[in-house]
Amino acid sequence: MNLSVLMLSSSRAGSEDYLQHAIPLIDQHLLEIKEVVFIPFAGVSISWDDYTTKVQNALPNYHIKGIHQFPDAQEAINNAQAIMVGGGNTFNLLNQLYQQNLVKALKLQVSQGSPFIGWSAGSNICGNSIRTTNDMPIIQPPSFESLNFVPFQLNPHYSDFQPPGHNGESRAQRIQEFCILNPKIPVIGIHEGSALLLQGNSLRLKGDLDAVVFKGETQKIIKPEQHLNGYLTP
Image (tube, rainbow, N blue to C red; front, side, top):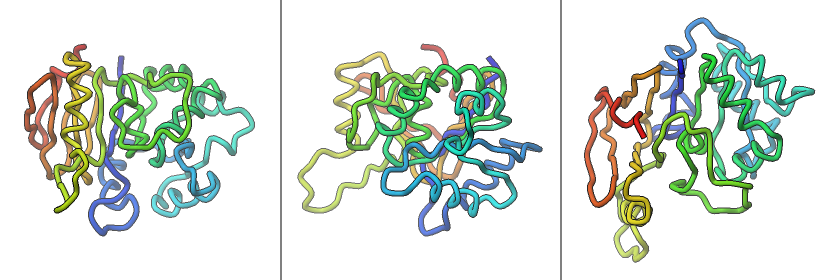
């Protein structure tokens, strides 16, 4: 399949403005496309209208329209030149996609070549499930299975920082728990400001920071621009 998927770890890098670090990647990913369907379903504490406006203000060179603003959401996906999915709560996002019968439509449209861009929760759903999200399960979707654009798990906002005096599990320990129960499924942790770029049969790490692959009892560091095509085979 001719998939074109940009999976951003976060909407911000450090103290930069909203989506500013991602604009060069977005521009390169979308090329001449200017019309974008935005899916704001991960937004819980922000209205979907306000979320769409926020993305539009951050990306003034594009025409951003929220999927909830179309009379028919499935038709909007079927005709989308490009699709963006924002961050927030991954469980709410996936639940809405299932409730509105959009999972299959998204898979089909992206498989036919429409570029897809997600960040945070919008990247979580690109893996084979959302079981390695950092988010609280505030709602129960019909399934944890997601879009499966890549046959592994993602962990956006990955960090190995452990605050002094904090006695809870680290991010790595949480991911290791998943790997103990699912030893054959890789989990790729991407730091804020980084992204995974899938183009057809090519997968690369974008940005300036390393990423971490967890699989079974192993951890492996991957470098920016490193080809990760081997992880596209289940």
